Length: 478
Ligand SMILES: *Cc1c(COP(=O)(O)O)cnc(C)c1O
Image 1 (cartoon, rainbow, N blue to C red):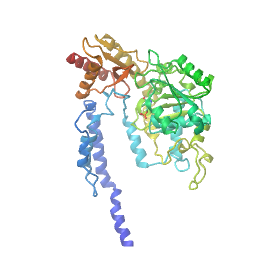
Image 2: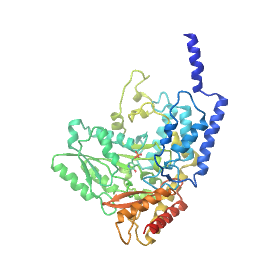
Image 3: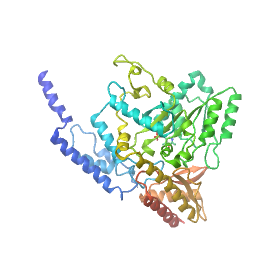
Image 4: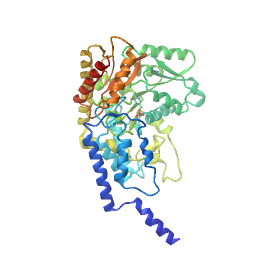
């Protein structure tokens, strides 16, 4: 047995490289990262290829390890060399991600030191850091002191936490679900209904309220729907306004929503996954007035605060239902989590073995200061207005509604032929070129192009290039 142990130890030591071996690995990884960043200003925003990434199959998971440079070659070609470039300033599609360098460093350090952020006793510093970030975000969003929340892997996961909390607050049981009505606009993100279904509430009636000409939820239509449900003996439960829709960046009238939620006893859970971060700016606070009256809200730092993908936050005004929805006991813990000095993240979500997720945001905030974030967000708002002005000046373009935040939806109006097909052809051409990455959507059935300005590396030059390429592509296709 001892000989076998010795042999196994010797072989398992390969998993833990020493100083010298690490030096080579650090260097190769640093070189890779630095080459990626230095190429970024000219790198494509999208790479269209046949069977993208399929070459990974040529590097099967091996029984014996390989040298890092060979592995990084494949990573570069098959993963980082195909599809959308999530670090490019010319990524203007969907809601673009960014990945600040300091955020990536935060992740690296969190993984390296592997501090546990699920339970206060084991990871007191990491848990306090998480709570500090949540408290700071709640303050920026205008929520009262004592508000709480959770740092989730993304907006969809954060919505699940919010919906379970709202269910707890209303005391809903499975028999109540077919009567528990949910209200949102016809522009709401698909993840709300998905979260309801995952929460086991697929039977809850969802009222998709038609939006107005600016794609905002219409309060009169909302109130009419609530009254009709009350007359029918149903139980209006949850209102999910959107603070910045994915399609057009529209902000629902949050004040009016909060008034109706108060009047009819609904929980207001605001979807600010894309837009809520703009509350860090003065202009954004004006556009988002009423956000601070939410019972809970979601914002995505991996969109609006430029962290690497994998961080969505739910903020909750009422700790009690948040905690009750996720309460647990375990004999293998030294004490029940609620007896500890600080709230533990495992008390506010499904996750338990949780890494120090806060570090990817806390480190950039500490290093750069909040003012740099405010400036970047104000820049994006202004760039959207600038882009809209340029679009308005282009002949043969319907520039779409003035941007409420930083998303534009517009379309070319060709002299002849089907406008939908024409705009799709413009988009396909840009995607094939790969210099700028835009996306499209349907608004009231009509295909529109979208320009979503949120990546940290998007500045005026990137917006100008996108508009120039759009014009050139349209001219070539006309
Ligand atoms: C991105 C987004 C979501 C979903 O968040 P994920 O982080 O992608 O899970 C929800 N709502 C809106 C408005 C979004 O933009």
